[in-house]
Image (cartoon, rainbow, N blue to C red):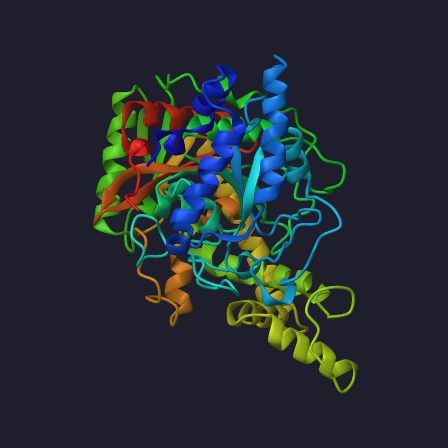
Length: 486
């Protein structure tokens, strides 16, 4: 494999600046890579080759005139297929949106275009981002580049797999209950879920509006900081966007974590976590201690309720958000309906997959008269307790650490018949979304040839602390340099 394919964006940026490689050559190289491995990995729903070649040429012209280029200019990027791209199919990996061409770009897409990045294509996901394995895609299952019999995680499985398989340098995903961090853990890449409100959700096709957040999937921590610099910031088009100053995240990458206080979440190191995962996390904690961090155990009792609580709130919001797919304004419409009711019924029955239907039904049930107080209201109260647990912990610690996922990637088909065991793979990531705090996953070991992820959680709007910790750990280890042999 050409060694340019495995370089992170900051190294490719230097080569572009020195004119050692052109963006057109780079783009051609990545599309050749896609042609050679995509039939195995299946990371992309749509490829945007023409668009990419045009963008790369424009960057090369800029360089030839001696103009300065930004850190992501001319760099190939993958985009999760629930981010609206004007005139380019945006399907959410659902049959109901199989031919949807958005009339506008999501704010993050506008920012990526303005930064001069080169879009390789739209990546596969669990339908409407509902799932932990990409097996719920309405089109096909993406494979894990480390072992093609295993899943890449979800819902941003395509975004993580395309970076791990070197089909793109970096990518954008979205995270509602772990959908960036869990696939990052399974595919051995870096995945960052920013604070809720830090990155605009305008143009992200909604699953659960109070939980969804867009973030980067990259080969290393430096790239995650670079991509965060580009996508973070206030957006008046998103009513939940926070008007908070955005720092230069790359300045947090000092490598110095002396006397940083780290809390190890004991509740996520016990029952249900594989021994190999626990051992890798313990070794990572020891490394952080060697680097000068102060380590203590911390208990978060409310975490026990995060999963059931999430599976009330997220489906409730999904049932409300997905009501718009009524076959009237856009999306799939059943052929020859008898009347209005049969048009609604058949269009939604044909368009939505089983997992989406399951969550719509759960959500509609918990919001219905007589059950709202018993379920939804109670879940919102528990959500407050989870938030308070984090606040208490962060009064004492700078960051918290845990495994990202209780296991390494499981075999495709292993959990499809048991939704509950599938839901449990997000046990360590869900509390973060409930509290709206930032968290990052980065590689910290292997078990049976499959990557293990370390999760670092931070205070609200303190992405710098998690990036700083992650960078110090990454620099002291070699895990992020491992590449799958496809």
